[in-house]
Image 1 (cartoon, rainbow, N blue to C red):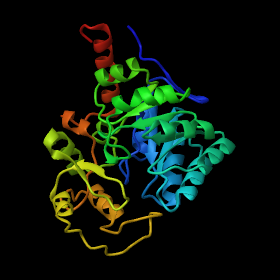
Image 2: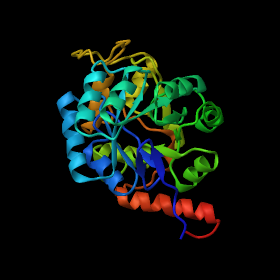
Image 3: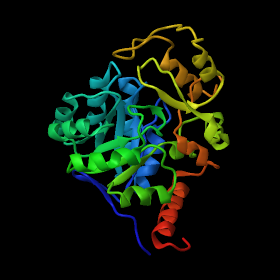
Image 4: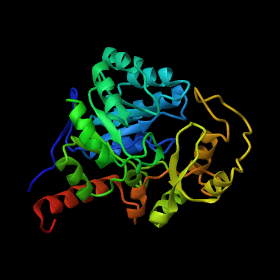
Length: 321
């Protein structure tokens, strides 16, 4: 039986070329990252929206439960970005995935801690810059990804340019849901894939059941772009809140926590994400990639990972899995 290739990022190697996306707020926590790492992938804990102490506790929890590859995903746009990164590194995070902005300092912090730095990029220019500063790999994220979007181009349109621009591993993200998608990415030259939505709808995800059920029930028409005060568009599942945002009828900010370095203050993005994570999926923001339309159940991570491998083998062999 043929096996998927491994994914090596600097000094870390995962048995499978699958990175679980770091989904804020409080969707990708220790239990999800641990399950993915145990199954052979790269598990990521989302730090954005957590306090420094909360992130440290989640990384510590995962590190105690697995010797697999565990990292964090933190938005550069978050005001306490530096503190979150240092807390994660102090607890033994293997790598830091950084998006929604570009930080030169994070490369030094990771190098000093013996960890790998993996920026999210949306252009060849930024990919080259990341490699020059010491990135161990880059994630190229297309417009089909869930959450905040840094480009209006699809990942397979971007991938050839990024591969030509850098010599480090390139990981594709955005709109990927199946083993056939993984094969397509690897055949195109990617070293691995990052998948978010399919992991948000697993048993180990910290999303509430109502949130996961929205993924199961979503059609392609339900997955839209919406305005975010971060200054980037966001991809989410349509609901009463996104309808309000489209009309310019923004919910009032009851208490500003000054969580972002720059914020348009149309509404509170953290409050909207936390509201959805608490189970109020009408008044909260449910981020999801276009791949959510292909989700039809809520499996355990172990079952999902086996399914992805079986689909990859079927696509690779051209026969039955």
